[in-house]
Figure 1 (cartoon, one colour):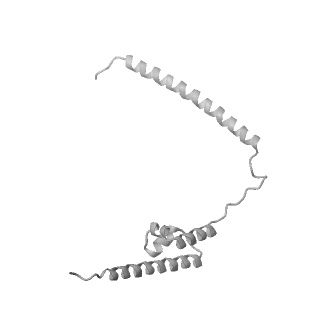
Figure 2: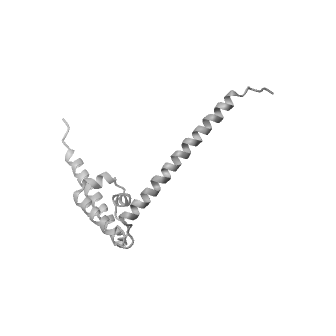
Figure 3: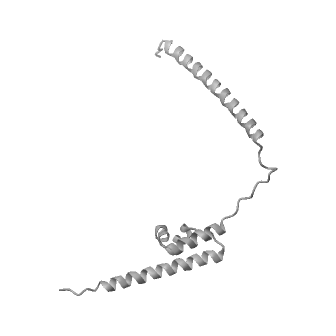
Length: 129
């Protein structure tokens, strides 16, 4: 009968897990202090772990999400003066619809002309040289 040495495997797995967590935390802090973008991808690349593993660690996931939002450049708010009015948008839509109608009509005419040209071409006798 063999001795049960599984506790050694569990101990090694726990040490590997803790080492990986400490590397991820260090990478997270380094990225934050450098002002670099903190994302799941950047932390995973810095620590050579998978992004899915980072998602399974609740505290790391929360930190990454928090820091990702903190470093995201804010969108400049358009002033009321820069925004298009409803009337302006309706006018642009009407112009676009008119253009679509005109292009549809032109497309139909060109298809008809092409059909006629192909019909005439079929009626011509085949000439061999």
